[in-house]
Image 1: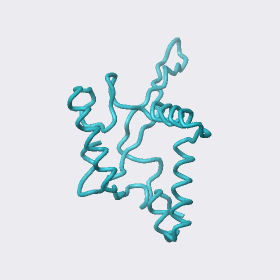
Image 2 (image 1 turned 30 degrees about the vertical axis):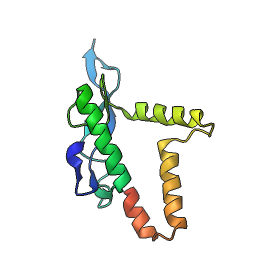
Image 3 (image 1 turned 90 degrees about the vertical axis):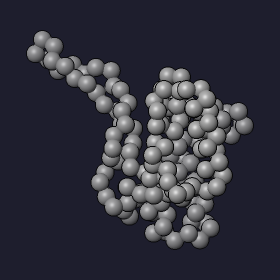
Image 4 (image 1 turned 180 degrees about the vertical axis):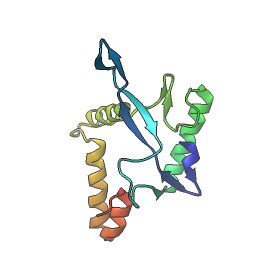
Length: 141
C-alpha cells in the first residue's frame, strides 16, 4: 500500500492470503471458491516479519511512475501500489508477469521465491552479514 512507503523505506506488514468461505448445506460443510484477501499480518508472528526495507532511488522513481499511471487511468482499489482495471494486482498475476518476462528474454522461468533466493545469494557473495540478510528476508534464523 502507498501508506507503507515513507522516507525511502517500505514497511512490510501485510500479505495476500487465500480464504475459503464455508456454508452449511443439508447439514454438510461446503467450501466456496477460494478468494484472495489482504491480511494485516504476515505468515507468522516474529520480530523479523514486520520490517522496513530500504528502497533505492531507482525503485522510488519507478514507484512514482506507477502512481502516475494509476492516477491517470483512475484504476480502482485506491491505496494499492499495483492495480489494473479490475482492481489490485494479485500474487498470481505478478507470477504470470514474471513468467512472461522470463520467456520474452529466453531465460528459464523464475518464481518470486527463486528471485528471493537469488537476492539472498548475491547479498551474501557481496559480503553482507548473514544476520542482515536474515532480517531483510524476514527470517528469525
